[in-house]
Length: 331
Figure 1 (tube, rainbow, N blue to C red):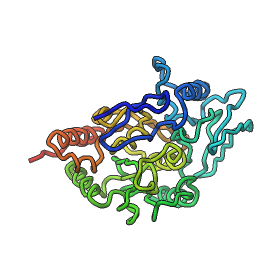
Figure 2: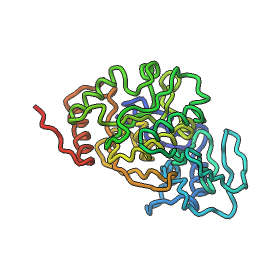
Figure 3: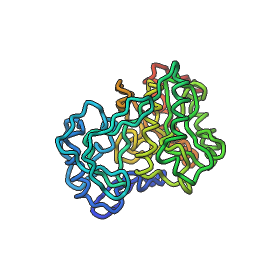
């Protein structure tokens, strides 16, 4: 079930199934401002060749992980860049720090309102002998430096990720809930039990896969992550994925799917449709990974119908095919 919600002059589809609202909405900004931002970034964003979108529609290209690609050509006059709410002009050359784990500022980035900031692939994953060592170093770096999580106050513990660093398959959800916040591990509680059942139905164990989150700290009252929070914490998810380099990703629910695929569509329209994400740009070795969107386990619990179970199982079988495995026979 989806509906159209109007914010000022902007009309965006939202998803009632998972209570998704305000994830990608530019609060307090009209459609004309968004179009202006998109046009200002056109010189430095490598867009796919596609027909222009109708005026007044959300431009998903602003949420593309490839937006900070090092090869992007710098414009002659750097447009204003926003670090915090008040816009300011920064005419200095972009800062490029080659140290492991450093944040690389995108070249010529257009000014964006804080409530409309993209998730950008800009955290350089730390070096290490193994993926496990690199993930451990990234977790320490995140805990010490993440612009969002080091300032957040609604959480008890950080929930970085869990599972096999060499996994072929990664599950991605949006943020920790209350149970995960207490235990420091993603997908504890009823939703975790349901996810475990889904993994077992695929012929895998939880120890075979990796589970990651867009935000590493619990949002207040378990609300949906805001765009400004995603802009600050989300790059660490992309760095995790760049280290693991999985063969496929399963996104769980609307927020994670929308953010990873840079889409405004609701999960009921995105689920079951294979897509591709381009990752690892900040590391300098970009790669493409297939993505399979499906329903969040919490939604599956609330809507445990034959049709919903059939849809989720179909999605999981496609994910297995992406990593070169056959689906187990079901009794």
